[in-house]
Amino acid sequence: MPGIGLMMIVKDEAHVIRRCLDSVRPFVDWWVIADTGSSDGTQDLVRAALAGVPGELVERPWVDFGHNRQEVLDLARASPHRGAGDYALWIDADEQLRDLPPRRPDLTASGYHLPVSYGDARYARLCLVRLADPWRWSGPIHEHLDLPGATLDSLDAPGVLVRHDGARAGDPDTYRKDAALIEQALRERPDDPRLQFYLAQSWRDAGEPARALAAYAVRIANPAGWDQERWQARFQSARLRERLGEPVDQVVDAYLAAYQACPWRAEPLVEAARLERSRQRHEVALLYARAAAALPMPGGEALFVQTSTYTWRAWDEVAVSAYWTGRYDEGLAAARRALAVRPDDERLQANVAWCTQALAG
Image (cartoon, rainbow, N blue to C red):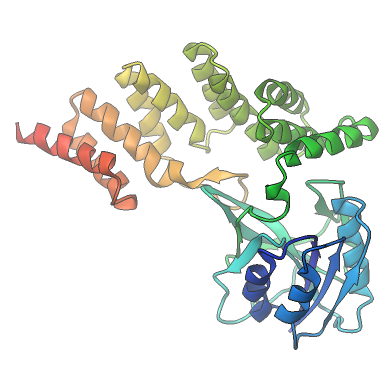
């Protein structure tokens, strides 16, 4: 059975690194970690957490994410601990492995996506790659592993839990710095769809909605790249238009355009239903909410799935608008489905009570 080597780059992660390494240790056989200039004792914590597991900690100057990750990948390929068929597991210090399987999965593909959870969002990420294959890291930030024609597969477990409480999260200028790096990279590759998308994401997270909206428009206009990034650009644009206070009709149209572009994603329908409900257009809101509730939660082919949309929010919108249109049976059934997911939510409890009272006459 192939071994698994842990690959990481770290800097000033003393407050989170033990949590990460404790979660990963049962799953890996060896490790290569590069420290890029920690001054908080991260290095000693890494050595202590992985004591007894073969591996090496190296010190490297910081260049950018893609460059430094590639250095680790090159070191891993030359490591004396590496077996012929071994895989590299990539994880960040503010993340944890969870739901470890009782036995290691059989690994035969060139790379594997693992399920990732970050707050309400779910998506799949390429985390596990075969070291014998010529994988390379690409991009200065929001970097990704690249190997044209690689055979890829997905694993249901383990999963990755993103905490986003590492060193980068403590820098208030993180996203502005990210945007500057991406803009520099775009001067060399102006049509790169991934860079275009993450420039928009960076401006959004930096609290610059107008700049983000302009950047999303560039990504939407580019037909290349992953269609889910392009769809997210449409959906996030609609959300920003709402945040910027554009007329409700225009915002609803933007959400519906996002739905039209990907009719198996329910998120835009729920937002459209919410807006129509907020202006008492309950028949229209119910139409959108029913359509959203009928859609199953997407799998690993989808980017940044909002799980609450599929588990309870669509049913909540059905419940409220069904009640206000006199469809109390439908409203009660939907309200109960939403409440089953969030049993301590007082508003959802009240929805069940209102529908029950209406049916009792």
